[in-house]
Length: 222
Image 1 (cartoon, rainbow, N blue to C red):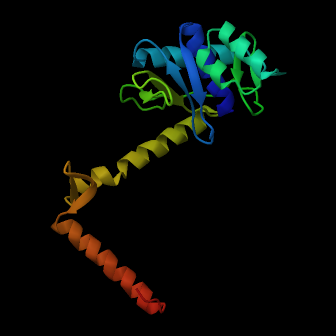
Image 2: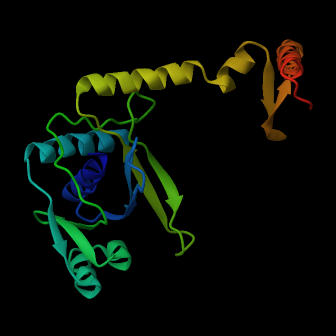
Image 3: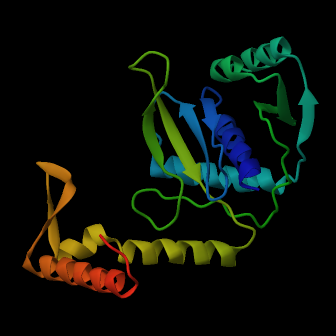
């Protein structure tokens, strides 16, 4: 479903901004979908809202995916005719075509249920697609792509549960709790290293003592 939603994302962006060009999606769709776009300006929070609304609109069209097998040369021609230079370079010899929207893909797709909920994270708000810059690998160093990613669920209930898990994870984030509780802090001189404060040293030493007791009781040697 998220792989299908990924293609809705590309379709929505192209319908809103025909000059946009996309490059690559995700390999793993267990939690997210994404595409990297070449676009002349940075995507805004308002753009992400417009994209999500357009994705819902496209999903409501209830169109199906059609498998079309073509040669590599024909795939390259199709994408170049549509203005997809990046996709023409990445053509894998076969494609999916959704009405007038074509894209390369290796796997079958499932219809996107009407109840699917693409989520967004924009401007610090509480949901998930985020735009960010990424260097375009293997090409000009100054050419950047923007990544938009999101997630989708079969029901509003599943989406609400997912967002609640994200909030709980943020609440338990050790990078926030450690400094707040006076256990440790970080320094720009060594950004990956926590510097333990007295309270943190007590917790750390107690954990070491506890583990050593377990090792001794079970006959392990350090």
